[in-house]
Amino acid sequence: MIPARYQASRFPAKLMQDLGGKPVIVRTYEAAVHTGLFDDVFVVTDSPIIAEVIEAIGGKVIMSKKTHESGSDRIAEAVEDMDVDVVINVQGDEPFIDADSLGKIIKVFKNDTEQEIDLGSLMTPITDWDEISNPNTVKVVVDNQGFALYFSRSPIPYPRDEKVDATYHKHKGVYVFRKRALMDFQKLPMLPLEAKEKIEAIRFLEYGKKIKMVETHVTGIEIDTPEDLERARKVWK
Picture (cartoon, rainbow, N blue to C red):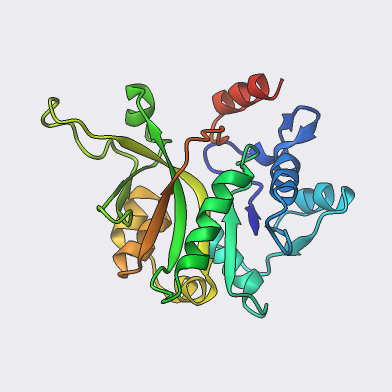
């Protein structure tokens, strides 16, 4: 499932911006399909403009009936009546998503025979302090089993003792849900930490859900700003 909102707050209409001759949302859809990992790929949107460009390439679209606070809420509505066990949310601004990273996180769920994991997500190591301190970059810290402790737009951990070596991780916009966890998500009201940081994954942590993080070294580019788009265009070339 690829949630796709036309009016993004930081960069309106970013999903319709040109990337190598096609809109960003089309590049993301094609990348997800070309991984060969999924039974079905859908774009979930409330925008007729986005729906039209996906349908024009023969893609599948589900139109949202309600207004949603987050992409996860949007997907929950779309899959409510579907007979599925696991749903993967790839953000519409992730045109460089790759099969290796997604395959790793799918394997986590196949191996979770006790079904202890509510959802999974991806993280990648980062070392550039400008990126670490950038509020558009969501950071995550994990426990010694790889479960998320917290997500933040601030640098976490804070470098109080610079002699201590710690790896910073950037959270990538991919979530893998057990369907029941996704259905729970839409019923749970937003709490202050999520509202303050504007990071939907925090809602799961606030309600005690377990998020397994999988490290990937495929960085790609998430298109949050016009500057990101320019970087993406250079990489695409």
